[in-house]
Length: 263
Image 1: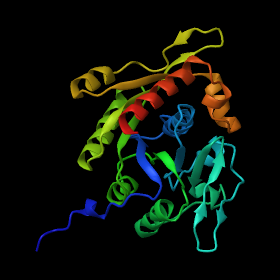
Image 2: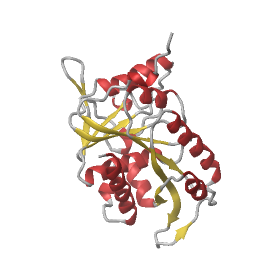
Image 3: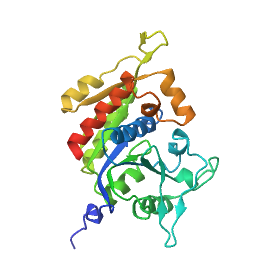
Image 4: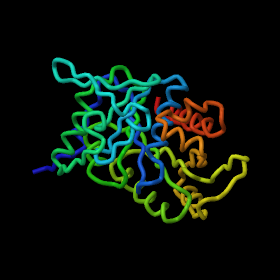
């Protein structure tokens, strides 16, 4: 008997034109910060943007957007109305549970939660749904690839070689499930002091050579700045609070590139 292709289960989300995954091979590289500011930058370049926090065990979007205590409305037929802030629609498991609550879920419950976010949220008309993936190459990534057509992916890394090895695994994973990698954002590429001096926090690895060898694009080199860190703590997207800085322009450049490729 012929085996069923698992990706034949893919069904588009009503009203959502394209889906962009933002992933990383490891945690701690600022993936959620990049996903958040990319979503808001997509809105700045004229697109209807939404952001799904698919990190079920470690949701961060509610805190990053200052919407931690908000709860989504549920319609009479059980559909979830996403939180909206600054023109971007938001959804996260963090809106449905207490921040300190640990989710001790096995695979089936995880799959059900992801499916609910894809099928039971009233996203409305959206040009790009940005999905902030959990770190790694596990169940959530595979479930999304099976359930919905993901148009492209952006991989987030830091400069050093210890991060590059995880980037390679992430890129390999996207290739295996048929999701095109649009490029890599090198986050915390350097640090800008208050005086404007540039400091290399991490030893530069071989990421540039690797990307050149694979024919992949480095979309941006985003610095670590005190303002970016404070924006995360305050729950205000950096590109909204500091729209005219070079770092915000980096995010705009990435958004324009995504727009040219996907929309």
